Structure formats: structure tokens, C-alpha cells
Length: 105
Image 1 (cartoon, rainbow, N blue to C red):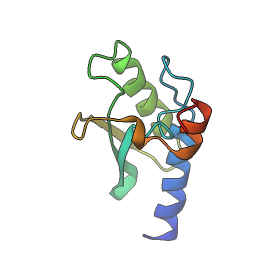
Image 2 (image 1 turned 120 degrees about the vertical axis):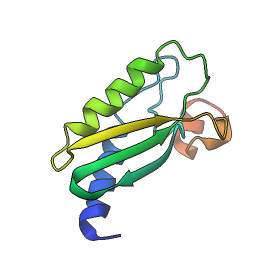
Image 3 (image 1 turned 120 degrees about the horizontal axis):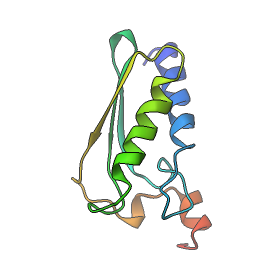
């Protein structure tokens, strides 16, 4: 991965840490909801993510917030958010920090 792509990935990860699941006081990145970040040519970003539950009532809000915040980054021209429920999210996907914060360790 080039230095530019590495820097862009770090910026995207930092941005995703500002998006929170309203039902859980931890950001979506540390919750393990982001499965993949692809950085394409000409600033096109594709993020594959899931939700803690398929019937999440704020799914549209979370996706819109991810898209808006990532597209606001310098160098990003487009952000496509792909939702998936394969594999299904589990508590084990959370970062150690998130599990500590929520008392799961």
C-alpha cells in the first residue's frame, strides 16, 4: 500500500471513530462494524460494514453519517457504503478497548 493510501486509510479510520451506534456508546470502528475499507482510484472509497442487529432502526442514519463524513475528507470524491450481514456481527468483533469500555472483559 502506498504512503498516500496508508494516510488515507488512517484518516478514514479516524473519521469512522467519530460515528457512534446510538444504542451503544462506542464508535462503529471499535465495535467491529466496519469489515473492509477499499481505496480506489480518483478518491473513490468503498466501505463494507454491518450493524449490531439487522433490524437496527437507525441503519439509514448510520450509513448516511459514514458517507457524509468520509466524503468530507480531502481527497475523497465518492464514498459507497455497502451493508452486509455476512458474517453476522458478534461481540468478539469489538476491539479490546471497546470490550473494556462496555465491561465485556
